[in-house]
Image (cartoon, rainbow, N blue to C red; front, side):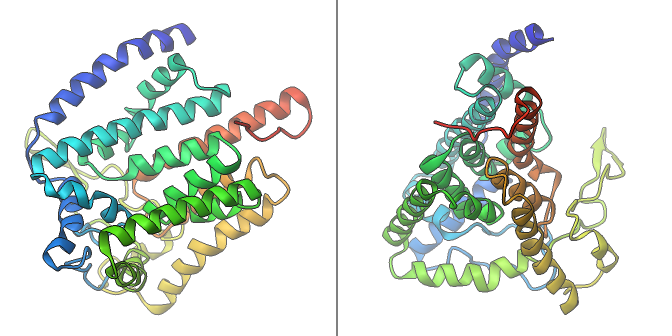
Length: 347
């Protein structure tokens, strides 16, 4: 089995190169790449990066920029390019992020960077639910997953910096970053990443950086915090023009599970919104408390709970759990072999 995986790992780069060539030829705007392009370019024409704002009510796949401001700030120089060139540069960035994701997961498994294992892991990850979809749609999730995997694969400043970088692109890993900051070196790395992102955001958005951050906190995050459900038939599969029923519910969040009965309500009741806020914050903190004596497991465990109890959990978000599961698996294996608590990964 291992030999077969190794051989597949050597073949997969050719498969990836073929898929890359197909993506390189795309000129369409029907993907998240176009949303990022418009959001990052908006300040240059006097618009907010969040124009138009998400509409009130439960978030329903609206085609609007909904990442924190640092991503738009980092992408703003690229918006001087035409859209097709921007999309190709972004494809390169996401491809590098994919291999960084694979390398991070590989390092968690084998304890070091090894190109053969990274190729094999990459070949398996590419066809995992959500990975190819993220790459195809051009959203920033691959970068978040890469930061998470690299953060959990290291200790010290690298862990703090990588997890903070992931949190500045997507809020979900923030509690894992906070847990990692128990280590002073990780705290230093996290503060350095935060400061660097602040400088980039200020340089790109100027005085508007504060306003954009407040808009995200006051308008965008609460809208996303209502969770989501799919409009009937939106997630259905089509084969030869015949629509098949959706294979699974659109939102797999454990916190949102009891709220599916409100699918026809425009705005969730106040108690439901409070519940989602409590679940999204309370369960990760509870996991952090439960793992307080397991520093080698705490960030990964808290992150896994954060993903599962976030207001929105689509199938395409599940790859963020892969590094968490690998950390758990390796620590479990170390405990079985050594009969004592596993030591944290070291650089």
